[in-house]
Length: 228
Ligand code: ADP
Image (tube, rainbow, N blue to C red; front, side, top):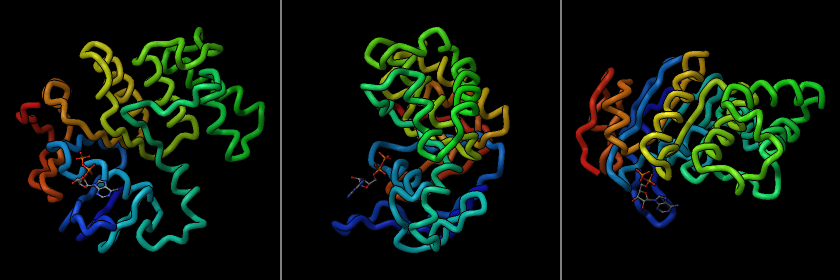
């Protein structure tokens, strides 16, 4: 599902953000990417949906050869990889329903299918009753659930969540974890960057730890003792 071989990333200012990165992730896995701030977690995530390009090495995501693909193919890759951010990134002038529907409209889905699927994902994230509200009228946890609904509405093979609980209190964070685990159980591969050791320790999954741009640990159902 994801394969990274000998990946290096230098930013334009010469900073080496990743080196010798080799990772293999199978379909249906739930993987935490952990590590200190600045370790390279976001950079690794961004390489997978071609927000950033690897300087060297080889990356495959699903059937996409990400390191060799033509820029014309990037929109196809982005349909296969749903992304959720720490700060939600909802469109403030669109309702909850419209925020989610928009992700289907831009890829030309038919109105009837949009209506059916958006209702389905609103139900999954338990927000059907708030469909007509705007992002600033709902809580942070609810906004993150909308962002997750938007990320999965086109049934991606992979969901990448970059610090999805970074702005949320512990209880709300657990609700988000429940939702991500439900989505994972439905077959979507989940890759979640976090430095929340409480979550990692209480919801065990595979842990890949990055420090200074290098993978220093890759462990099935690992714990995470890093103290934030
Ligand atoms: P993390 O997600 O683990 O906090 P990042 O992947 O964001 O780490 O950053 C890894 C390193 O790359 C850091 O030193 C950061 O300052 C640097 N970096 C991130 N984005 C850029 C960029 N666009 N230009 C230059 N350096 C960057």
